Length: 262
Image (cartoon, rainbow, N blue to C red; front, side):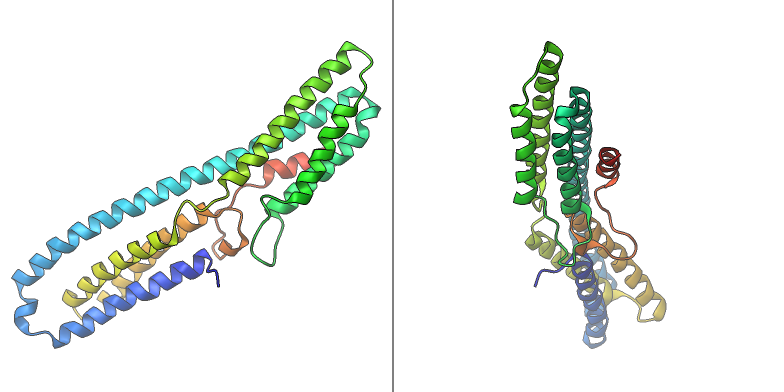
């Protein structure tokens, strides 16, 4: 079973918070000299090193995932812009290009469905062969056009250039649709957090205020992990929870589709 970001973050929350509670239980059985000020100072310094390393790694993961997210968002915007410009050129060509525009509209609708429509399986088809075939027909029909003057020749040349740009943007989306964050890496970070919060639990006062403070802290860290996973999988419905998830904006492609339908 493949876990989505909310399930992974909740699992990390439970395990890490459980380590803090386990630390509190262990502290009751430890001899007093194990809980002395000297022991506490030594453990605090050691855990501070692990905590600093963990904070740096989580910050790096957020930065890396955000860069990947922005790249995919930019590619979707570029794809939408190229489709819109291609439709404009075909409209200028004349009535002979109307069937091609209908195919282009169908391609835009299918691409929108692939990337942004609700999918019960929780996955979106970034690389859908059926959608690619429709665009192949668009290119083939552009090549088959028979221009009657220099103006139409120029329009065909520009249309083919934009068609190539659309194909390039599609290929970029496919290449970018990979997880930049291996889940074993998340497991290592979770292990560090278990060590950190387990040590917190050993030396923390056993009262409700301390437990609530630890819980809020673990929730914040778990949400940071969820943020990284959301940014790394912006097309998947599996990351959609409340509050609303981070997703690639569908507006550029939606606006183009509405324009083509007019």
